[in-house]
Length: 209
Length: 251
View 1 (cartoon, rainbow over the protein chains, first blue to last red):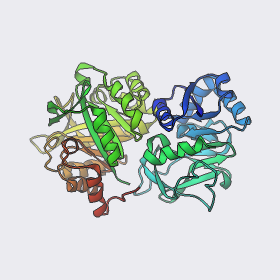
View 2: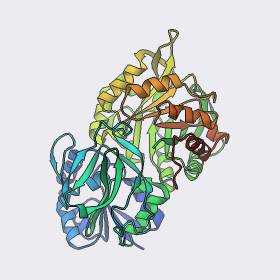
View 3: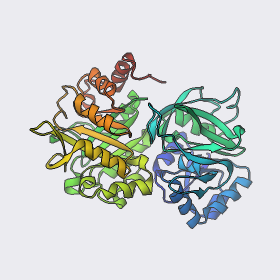
View 4: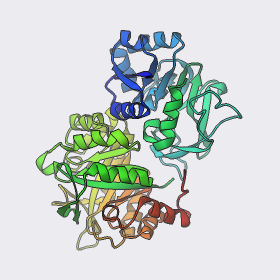
């Protein structure tokens, strides 16, 4: 049985993501400490909320060191929503805040002047493969192109390098990175644990990474 | 994309349905059974409203949420009886994705900002119970449509947005439970007044009722009674919306 560690740093939504992994048949451990994080097989950084609060909670628990240490082992890390945003170098929600800097890039506000797109973006959106075969051997390996996933966010990731963009999603004039990846570090802006069958399939693929 | 949401009003451990947010009747199956059924039908989201929590402060809703997360993998919004930041945290921690605050937001509007600042405005839904007064103006009601205010619904929606609400859940008390169509005038006014998504609730009896609301500016329609009594399914509503070019029915 695959064993997955989900980081609890006080930023909600733990249960939903735990249930989704359990549904796939994984054993879920809620982890809160450095030692637990570095000894994980699969690590998930969830999160709902604001970027500065999230980083604050991680820092006050001294968790960033553990996450960096884990990533060095080459085992897979998945960030979800705020958890994905914090993988990047910097965020600009409320105030400029340093992120985990595991993938170079910034987290910026969604444009508020798009006619048919409201912020916060609370919706199901199509997730697009950015180039042919980009999804081979990734968390999207079983996902058909243009599948729908559920998003709830006001900010989006902008990786510095195009190569770290694993999927794109349209938001008016913007095609933002709805999933990112750099080697064993990956993240989705959408909530796989809230995206019905499509999300469960993605979680299954993550556990095969 | 427009959304179709199943709304479940609960009282203690039971699913209930009233008319004009009163006269609650119990439904035969558990809330979780109904919820799972709507998930299978293709609901985009679930809304649970604890119908009596703001009057009695009961919290069995948390057990219902926890159970729901076992087999339902779509977003869950929970409202009813949320008075403090701690209440919101409790509900989110039980597995909800968003909290809907109604009465306490009217009494202490800064709670909206507190929750939005702590958990992000995307999980702060301000629930508005609206009712037309004798002069034809929409006024805000609260405490499960028992208490009347002189607050204008449009102004309150705008204030809620300014305070950090991420969504508005707009319930028309007069249409609620009647299954005679939605109040398109109200939906139009509120949708045009704010930039945040507006979920509308109250009055869907036929699929076309939901489509009309979506065509009049609503971002999402929440349906209760017509689903519970099996008059409509989520897929019927989506098919109709798709026929009206309001929605793309996805796989």
